[in-house]
Length: 219
Length: 237
Image 1: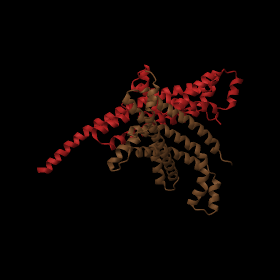
Image 2: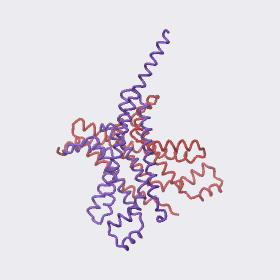
Image 3: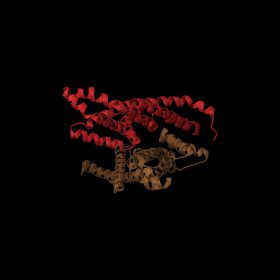
Image 4: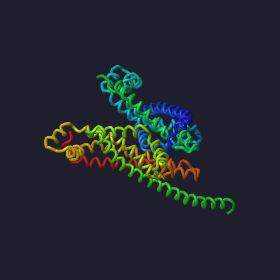
C-alpha cells in the first residue's frame, strides 16, 4: 500500500481536533493527579492508623491494576449507582486517580527529604501543624520533586489513547474513525505514532531543563 | 400454597439459574485470566531479551550499534503502547506481515517494556564500580568474560527490583490487547457485561484478579532477589 500525502492533508484537520482533546485530557489529568497524590501522601502520614492503612492499601490496589479496567469501572459501573459522567470527565478522573497513586510516592520521597531540623525549627518557632506544612515543609519539598512529577505527566500523556475505549474523541479515536471510514490504516495510525513521538522528544528536552533548574537544592 | 408458594418456587428456580449462569461466566473470566497470564509470560521473555540486547548495545564500542539501540529505546519509549499495538495489528498487514492478535500483543508488549528494561540494564551495569573493571583487566579477562563472570552477576541484583516493577507494568498493559479482540481478562469482562447487563461484578472480579497477579509477581521477584543476594553480603558495600 502506498503512502498518500493527499490523504494525509485531508485527514489532518480531524486529527488536530483529536490532538486538542488529548492535550486537554492530559492537562486536567495532571492537575487532578497532582492534587490526589498530595492527598494520598498526606493521608499516609496521618497519625490515624485506620486512615493511613486503608488509603495505603487503596493506592496499592489502584497502582496494581490496569488503567483501562479502571476507566471501564468509572464509565460503566458508576452510572448504575446514579453517577452519570460524560466520557471526558470519566477519563480525566481515571487518569488523575491512577497517576495520583504514582505522584503520591514522589511527594512521599520529597517530604521525607526535608531535613529533620526544619521540623524541629518550626516547632521551636511555635508554628502549628498547618503553618509548618504550608510555610516550611511544602515550599522546600516541592522544587526537587518537579522533574519526577513531570516524568509521570509525560507518561500519562502517552496513556491518553486509552480514553478512546470509553468513547472520548481524542487523537486515537479520531484516527480510528478516519481509518474505518476510508479503510486506510497506514496513514492515520502512523501519524498518531509520529505525533506522540514528536511530543515525547520535546518533552524529554523540557525534562532535562527542569532537572537542571530544579533538580538540586543548594544545601 | 397460593401466590406466596409460587413466588417462592420461582425464586428458587431463578436462583439456581442464576448460579449456573454465573459459574459459566466465571469460567469465561478464568479463561481470560489464562490468556492474560500467557501474554504476560511471553511478553516478559521478549522484553527481557530486548532489554539485554538494547541495554548492552548502548554500551557498545561501535557507534552504529549504540545509535541503533538508542533509536529503538527512544522510539518505543516515546510512542505509547496502545499506538504500537494498533500499528502492529492494523498497519503491518499492509506491508505484508499479518500477525494474529496474540502475536501482535506479545510483539508490542515485549518491544515496549523491553525499551524501558534496556535503560535499567544500562543503569545497573554503569552502577558497578570502576575498580571491578580494573580488577578484571588485572586478572586478564576479556571484555566478554568480564561481563559474564564479574559485572553481570553483580548488576543483575541491581536490576531485579526494577524488572519486577516493569513486569507489573507489562501485566497492566496486557489489558490493552482486549481492544484488538484478544480474549483476555478485560475482554471477557466486557463479554459478561454485555450479556448480563451487570457491570459491578465482572469489573470488580477482574480488578481483584489483576491485583492478585501483581502481588504474585512482586512476591516472586522479592524471593528471587533474596536468593540471588545470598553469598554477596560480604562483597557488596
